[in-house]
Length: 240
Image 1: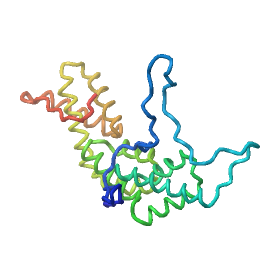
Image 2: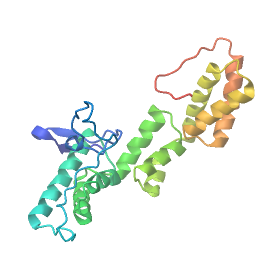
Image 3: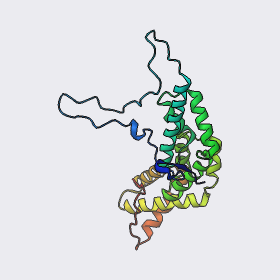
Image 4: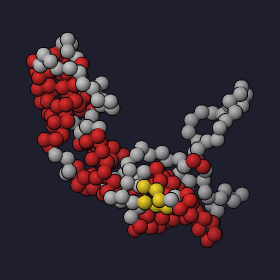
């Protein structure tokens, strides 16, 4: 699914691309600091600025006026548009970004409902695109993809549906390709150590232990019997 939102200058921003998530918009990032001796500030991430007025002197939370609530709602939408301009985002990622500014829960909910209704946020489409890019582009196994989508707030049912598109034979072929490259790069190493290294790499990539051991044995035998085999490593493949 491809969605577009209007960015600065009225240009459409593509939200179909799945990218790594940066929770800070440009206005939330720390300004350049004076690093001269004596002027250094503590290192570490800065907490996003709250959109809620400071509590009253008696410590009671400030009661938001309708004008303030409207302004916060506008900021929530602007923040969402900025993030969507960088790439597709999940429901939870955007809601969490708004919550970091202390936006009231009901305003966040209304903003997210509007984004969903407009088609700008769709966790089902996000998960499908994510599975395809990680499975085909990075050769990750289903286990790793599932964990990553869970960390982004996608529900289990949506993840399971997206992973149905992963063909078991294709996943095993990916695992074998990775295992064979690792087997070629570890020729000369004692077999048991090779097995441990290759299996460990595959498990980290999200493949099951059963598949990892099965293709590892095949990959080592294949690499060691192919006299003309060369090491063909594709940039971006993790074979550590």
